[in-house]
Amino acid sequence: MGGSVIRMAAPVYRRTLTFPCAETLIPTDAPRAAPLVAATFCALLLTAVTPVGAQPLPTPAAAPSEAQQVEALVRERKFDEAIKRADEVLAKNPRNLQVRFLRAVLLSDTGKSVEAIAAFEAMTQEFPELPEPYNNLAVMHAAAGRYETARTLLQRAIDVAPNYLTARENLGDLHLAIAADHYAQALKLDPANAALKSKLQLARDVSAKLRAAR
Image (cartoon, rainbow, N blue to C red; front, side, top):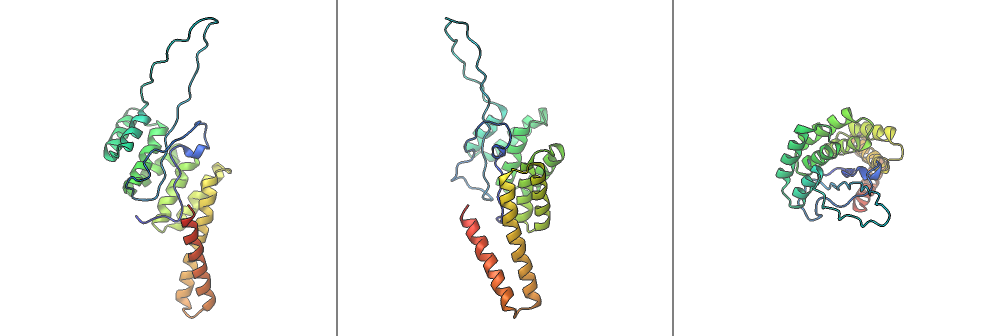
């Protein structure tokens, strides 16, 4: 799949949910099939009440969560093993939202576009209140040139989360790509039209600058 005109949401849901923090998941120099971003989830820390005068007990190191186990494999660039581990987790708990999103992003990052699309589509059906699966599904359709499908999905993301910045930014970029596509189609009907040529070139130049600004 070629590069998309819009960009993916990270597994941390770009901080639009209640997860408190995020960090980079995949090293920036790792080989990837598309310029996608991935991130980790942070766990909430609960502090126990200590009686007055008592010394707090040492806190034992917490065992890594299932999502963290997947992330560790990704950091080691063992992508196939990470997907396999995610599948094992989801076989026991299909509604593990963190691992499901990580798995879908991993599938997309490793070029398994058909499986990734299926994974994101399933999430939009089972978790329709979340905007990120709609956004990432839109990115994959846009990369394949299915702009209208991508536009519908981005609008759905905005409908469920009006303050979701990534979807709004992506929709703006997508509208520009749609405009360029229509200018190109119109130019085929009238190849000598200088105004259409200028508009098409301008749209392409702006699109290139937007991609470079990411």
